[in-house]
Length: 305
Image (cartoon, rainbow, N blue to C red; front, top):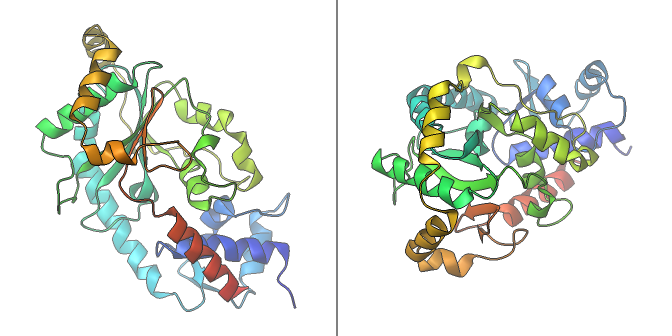
């Protein structure tokens, strides 16, 4: 018998998170369902997965059959995530006093609380329109002075400041390498707003309703207050004072001058390059794991369908 549409959605979803050894609660599975049927309820989902031979349920967590060992791993990853938040929240707070920082999001593994001991902390920083190079200069300089940027062979608890976006350019379909770029789609749907006084998280959702085509149940993340940084008058004061320093063009020129040639050589179009050096989006990576993850996802789906 061919799997139903809902069963296919479940397998596609669990197959993706299986890449990262990450089981899901039923509520999370509902939220992240890939191409789910319309008007689905959590009750219908629960009834379906309880009868699927391709799915195992343990202690309220769902994974693909034969992968129950990742259940215990999630507990360890959660505790490690808590440690990282507690250790680095005050350092992230310091970044909010710098010029033109409008929002900071935790992204990637820590956003899902799925880290290991040596993981770094990936941040997406939103700048004021037209000020992205200024924002990057001050935030990376402070992180370097504090000794919390990743170093060769050392990433534990460091702050990876590798993605910047200006708040006037929140439409992000351009980031997709292809229409079914599953990693990018899930990445865009799980920004964790650690500092967001202007509610840019909701603005991103409003600007990117096209994500509902594949992930209609995934609404913007609402963080617990203990995980967020409150904006105060002092941040307004320091951001304003530092914001009157030299023009954006100077900070852009300076950073391009000192940027390693390797990164310059890797730079190119947003949709296909690991490094992007534009005036509204900055991305700094040396490798693109997306093609391999896409391959693993499709292979696992084929195995379980």
